[in-house]
Structure formats: C-alpha cells, structure tokens
Picture 1 (tube, rainbow, N blue to C red):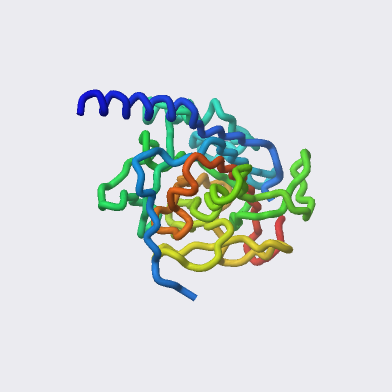
Picture 2 (cartoon, one colour):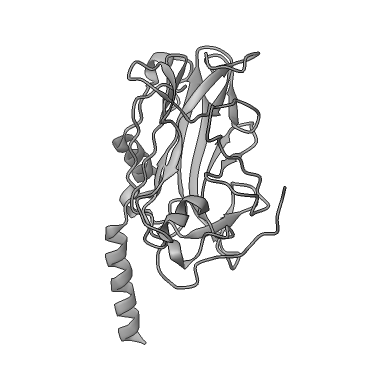
Amino acid sequence: MSAFKTYFNNGRQKLRKRKRLIVFLCILTILGMTSATFAWFTVNTFAGVQVFELQISTGDDLRVSMDNHGSDIEQYTHVITNDMINSYLRSKYNKTMEDIILDPVTTADGKTFTYQDGTVVEANGDESYFEFECYFIATRNMHVHLTTEAADDNGLQTGASGGTEVSTDSPAPQSDVIRSCRVDFDGEGNTVKTYEPNKSGQSTSLPTFDLPSGNMVYNDDNNLFTLEKLTPKKVAVRVWLEGEDPECDNDIQRADLKIKLSFVGIREGSNTPR
C-alpha cells in the first residue's frame, strides 16, 4: 500500500504541474426543468482544465479593481492583470493560479460547494473551484450585464461578436467540457447569477442562464448586479465544473477550457448599453 500511495501521489504532483489556470484580463469595452443526471468523474484523477482565459471588459462609465478605493474612481482601472489576481491569491490563500486545479463539485446556491459525498469544498483548494473578488464602480446608476458583444481598443462597443464565450481546443468527447462549466457572479445585496455556457436544458436545481448565439438581448437573465453612482460593489467570481451536469464525466478529463467574460453597463431606464 505504501508503494502504491507513493506512486499515486507522484502522479498527482506531475499532473498538477501540467495544469494551470491562466487568467488573461484584457482592456475591452464593457460593454423547462429536467431531472438531474449524476455524471460525476468515477476515476480518481484531476479534472483537466489546462487553459483558463478570463477577460473583464470595462469602459469609461464602468471600472474595476482588486481593491476597494471608495468613491475615488480614478483609482479604479480598465484592466486586471495576472499579477493582481496572483497577489490576491497569495495574500488570502498562499497560492497562485498555477496551484488551482478544478475537480467536479456541486452547489445549490452558488455559494457553498460540495463533492458528491457532501463534503464541503473550500475555494481555491488543490481540487476545488476557482474564486476571486473584485470591486466594480460606475459613474452613474446602472445594471451590469454579461454580453457576447465585443469592444474596440478605445472601449467602444462594436456590436460584433467576440465578447463572452467558452470554447475548447480539445477534440470530442473531451470538448464536452464546455457544457459542464459554470461561472457565477455574487454581488453584495444581489442574487447570485450563474452563467451556464452552451446550455441545452436545466440539468441542476441551481437556476442558470445562457447568452444568445445571435444578437445580444439585455434582460433580467443576464443582469448580474446593479451599481449605484460612485459606490463600489464587491463581486465574487466563481468558476467550477458542475458534477451533476450530464456532460461532466470521465470523457472531459484533461481537456482544455477557455473562458472569456465581457461586461456591459446599462443605464437605469434603458435596455441598450450606455
């Protein structure tokens, strides 16, 4: 048993080194229920998320920071870098993104996560889910939505596709990883909203939404949280593999996952950006 344990642990350590969550935060404009299917991984290996790209887009009306600077909007920025995320993880968890590996978990409220056996999982563990906190602020009252629309380098919404998207370079059946991924947004005082990319039906009890494949429509589904003028709001962003999703099985292990998130601010009383 000792030799097996040593071999197993060495294998896990080698696999950990190959798996990295790489976050690229770039300057862009921010512009029927079914029965749950239990599909969890059945072999004892790590989930295969090798590439993680997260882009937070902000414009002049909407800015973001890893720290709360109060109402001093000039201290907020249009970009969050890898170094900013890693500094946050080091100070709070004594690790970096390279140390975080995703394994299947589940949640009923988007806040508390467990393994299949009910064991509670902590954020940013060696085998858990990815989480970081940031602060959004706006120059006016607005609703913040997730969007599929892209923006140019000057922070102007182009109306073209290229905003939020989840993709993979892995072949089938590993490519099913894009259907088992979840991203939620937990803004203080707001209901947790959970994005389920490539959603084909409600597979868990946790309410989720998807974004349209065509023209972007802004509605209550993709309204993540609200902001009051010059009042920063702390938002927790969480990413996980949903163990109860039908696609979250052994086939998706060691797949690569690419996630890009783009946000837009909608003024109160309007249904179009800025």
